[in-house]
Amino acid sequence: MRTSIRRVLSLALCLVLLCSGFTFGTSALTADESWQHYYADYMQTGSGMYMAPGADESTRNFSWYAPENAGTGRVIVSENKDLSDACTFTGGSVRTPEGDVRTKVTVTQLQPGKTYYYRCENDVWQSGTASFHTLSGTDFSAMYTTDIHITTKEENDENSLVNQSYTFSRVLDAAADKAQLDLLISAGDQATTGSRREYTSLVSAPALSSIPFALCPGNHDRKGIAYKYFTNNPGEYKKAIVHSLISYDYAYTKGDVLFFVFDSNVASMTDHRNFVKDAIRKYPDAKWRVATFHHDLYGGRIPHRENENALLRTIWAPIIDEFRFDLVLLGHSHYYTMSNAIFRNKTAQDLTGQTSVTNPKGAIVMVSGSINHPRIREEGSEIPPLGENIAFSYLTNEPIYNILDFSEDSITIRSYALSEEDPFHTFTITKTDPQGGHPENGRTFYDFFVRFIADIFGVINEVWTTARFRLHWNDFVGK
Ligand SMILES: [Fe+2]
Ligand SMILES: [Fe+2]
View 1 (cartoon, rainbow, N blue to C red):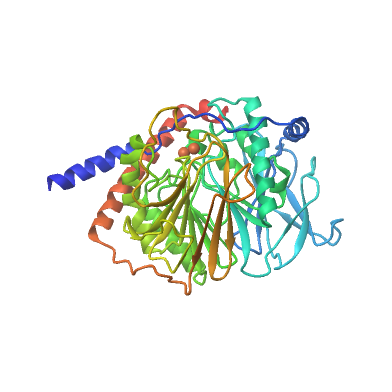
View 2: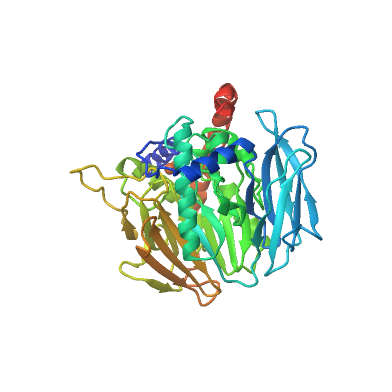
């Protein structure tokens, strides 16, 4: 009994530590002159035009800033480069704390295997013409990365924004050299301070007008309120009793994959579980289930976070197991790691030294290092130990990105450091049927008990966060 009480107290203490932050050095490159000019012009328009995935391949979501009196926002979409024979889609807008609006439009009825040209506009502004394409089958490639941290410092540092947005643009270009990208996945901490200027900078790279970019809320993203206005996520689960001020869990499909994006700042596991059930009900036939959330689970390397990670493992593993996620894409630790196949928080199948697995007996959990703020070993210091369930790890001061090649039967992961042409790690997961090798999950009373405690904490934490937000409104919105 005493052990149970200690576990509960430790759980509560760890939950309090859940959202703690940290600072690091930078891996940002210095922007060249051409980027500096481009970036200055881009920021002058201030529109921050952003394309997110739609709920499925027949839709795309757009958002951008506009003056309050700019009229209805429109996205003009055509199969012709000159935008002839176009369809016009309109949407709503939300008033921002700065007094203008963020327009949010969903484009629908897209056909498979087409290239579409589009322009976003309102009565006083229009974007240039850009294009995107839709899949014709189940095969596609995505880039996965995390912890972009589009500024280096805790304040809005203009120089840092220029250099880091340039670095991210270089990462996108390098990734586009390796595959035709149909999706970009970020596992959170896109920003450092959570400011509007950061998110506007985040989408400054020209490549982002052609590839849908799926964002995820990290602990740094909720240091401000801008993420809430900036995003236009598909398939948001708005029935959640507890959610953060900036985000809802959301889901979307592409090819044969159902993607789940969780806000792991929120501990309410009943809501997260209901979200997954709801998404699976809508898309029951997806062969692959890929989850993204921000907080690392298994990586190790950071001793002072191990209590927090133990708690996170306790509350997230039952969901990962129950719904048989194939691949879980995380961030936060800024260390590259890939786990063994994991079931019930233990190695179910050792993948050390392997380059592939067929029908793995559990989920494979990755953390893609970071784009900015790499954790660097100090001269002469020892490298803290890896988590015991890690199959492969990699240390570098460079930005890291991964190409995920999805096909009907397999996912191949290729991981790169920015300056390298060859991947430092490749791994293929093959499944011969939708269940793969995942064991049947018998949920236990302990899982139910943990969920109950996590729900209570989730409510308390979000009430506290909301109160803090209201008390310090100007600090949150003034960034
Ligand atoms: Fe981070
Ligand atoms: Fe983080």
